[in-house]
Length: 226
Image (spheres, rainbow, N blue to C red):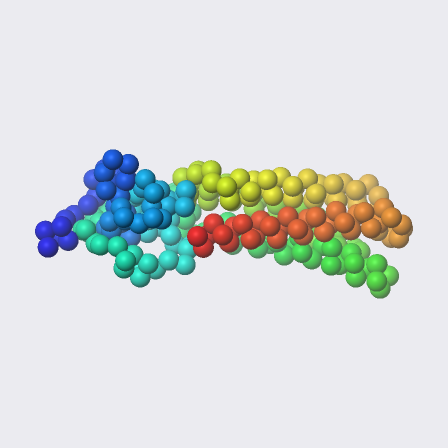
């Protein structure tokens, strides 16, 4: 009963980081001992979250709720210091990256679909729409990448896991493919209208855009729901 009534603050909780002491984490006002969990090796969970911290804000975008901690013993209560929320806390609660990232994903998937519709129908409006969507997607990509960097910094403590390395690689690939398509179509407005093998190569490059945004969405989902 004495342990259950123990009060932890942010500073005292830091001592239980799982390195040479037990691994404790706080979640929604309670402190749990995760030392015996195979998912918390040396106080680290999935290479992203660290023990000795309050995870309430960091798990706001994950499918975890209080029940996930029912398997761990509660060792006390977490008393959050009364102070203004940090910019990082505000950003985590607003979740800007999951909100913004849907735009480039939708654009990336739509670009080749519109071009293929033009090749099948000959309707020039599909080709024009493909170009406009390409431009919007290209402009949205750096904004999305910036929001992703901010989320990685404030929500995941800049932990460089394999999934984050994949996201960086896919983002670079997406930017290169989108840049090629934008420059190509801007310099040669008739690249798709010509109907030759350059046209099909151009569509293939657009399909690369769709592939990269799909891979980014899949990897992002693994990070959020891990």
